[in-house]
Amino acid sequence: MTFEETNLNDNILDALYDMHFEEMTPIQEHCIPEILDGHDVLGVAQTGTGKTAAYLLPILSLLDDGGYPEDAINCVVMAPTRELAQQIDQAMQGFSYYIDDVSSIAVYGGNDGSRFDQEIKSLRGGAPVVIATPGRLLSHLKVGNLNLSRTSFFVLDEADRMLDMGFSDDILQINALLPKTCQKVMFSATMPSKIRELAVSLLHHPVEVKLKVSRPAEKIRQSAYVCYDPQKVGIIEHLFKNGDLSRVIIFCGKKDRVKDINRTLQKLKINCAAMHSDLSQAERDEVMYRFKAGQVDVLVATDIVARGIDIDDIRTVINYDVPHDAEDYVHRIGRTARADRDGVAITFVNEQDIRLFKQIEQFLGKEVEKNALPDGLGEAPEYVVKKGFPAKKGHGGKGRGHGSKGKGHGSNGKGNGDNNQRGAARKNHHGGRKKPNKQPKNPGSSI
Image (cartoon, rainbow, N blue to C red; front, side, top):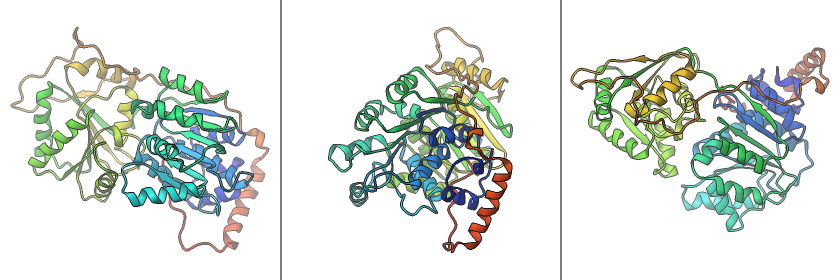
């Protein structure tokens, strides 16, 4: 289904036309009409399915149509990390390119005083759209820098990640300050019981849209090393000494391990950098800039970059630890084999994680190839589940099929002939409009 077949207004459609976005993804097709119709929405979809556009496009269209207070914060979008907040803000700039009176501000911690002063000025001036991390927004609320009593839209993006990071109380405090008439949208990659409970407390008769978690792209060559924990460093050294590895992300479950591995790679003269929550915002920005620009070959990171960060040329993903569930595994290795490229995913599986990795293989529907340990590292553990090693608490990785209560799109009353006329009118519209010198920035293929 195309964007032209929705009730998105012409300014939004013009921006999409310039960015060459025509066909909607399934999450967009199910969510956009529901949000335009004023329903609360609960969406379950993994990163890369286009969920950012699924909520930004209808909200921007409604705000541009008017009827909302000019001096109020009309929309709040919550994101778990600074990086995702920045990415949402960038997408917002592209989608709102032809909208004059709807601007956004990204609000997140770890900045210097001048940034905080800029946030205060924008918030008190009534920035129409605020994109924020929970802790930073709550800090502004506590000192009276903004008022949410007239907010019309509230979005929680990657709600499961926010709960994992301990933001549950912050979210509830912010929600208590919103008017009862506020329309709410909540997206999560998984649907554990705690997300269901949060949805019940926040949303009013929501339309539920559930998309099955996709298996990793076929172009990703997956393999694993079954090993003891002390052998992992030796495997890392072997991989980097015997292969031309560049454009690599190494994922670790803990920030202390990220620091240790980064130091190990530096001793091996590997051009690497670490990304974890102890870094300031300026340091994070610098690391990501250097990695994206190719100035750094290897990024060692916690799951802070597993979701929502678009880097198209990653060749190899190494899971130093087995992810907690199949969804996290898909998110991690999905950083590679993007934009029609091939990719490699390697996972280190210790004794404790064998049961967990077998659950991931069950989700994948196949056994992942096991590599032999490099010479000199000794024997590997047997790949069997032993008593005394229970699986980590996870979700088992079983995706669910579509369960949308969403309405069809036939109600918008637009037939194919009308759509063709509308497309022709758009081209004429572009031909007659005096356009700015630059085109709207394409926020990436996974909008």
